[in-house]
Length: 285
Image (cartoon, rainbow, N blue to C red):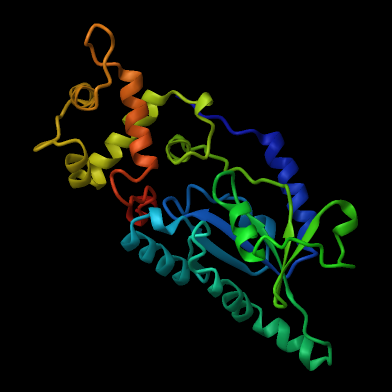
């Protein structure tokens, strides 16, 4: 199965983000903690150039906490500040403003030295679909979303959202999709719900999930589907799961489509526990 990306959409998003960057002090890059690289746009660093960036690993409650720690350390070693957050539950959000202040300390000090009054940090949030951008904005704004006044951008249909006295967010409709030349990235995004199911071959996604779990989380796989040992043949594994979960046709044969949907939904709803699909050692080997 080939999952496509759309260069026209990418070009439009790139133009929109580039135009709006001049209005902000910092970029908040929102990624899925389960796939911190696969859910990021590889062109982002080129687009934002020297603009400070804060990486926010959202949905950290769904990811393998050990792997999340490894990713934060790796990003730090590369000179990027990263935080693990859960925008749905509001965890880790208080650290965002403090981290942004640290990243912008030199700039703010220069403003102070020139006698300029301190002002709220202006930030843009960038994230692919289903990564939690709207939830994060609403959480930060406590749903009291309001324009902040005579700030550039408001008259062009963009909205500045005030977050207390220290932060203003530029809400932009521009969406950056990853360019997944590597089809594995497409599978990971599909598995975690970033791509509409109607566009997918669910059996292919389930096979990818099961193979990944066999390689990285075999004990979770065995526990969920009551297996003492993992079958070598994928068809045997599908047959076992289908019969175990009652995914059968009227003729008592295994319904592979229903079995595939069951596997994918079990992953998405954490029935197998917290899982990270981007493993640092795999991506940077």
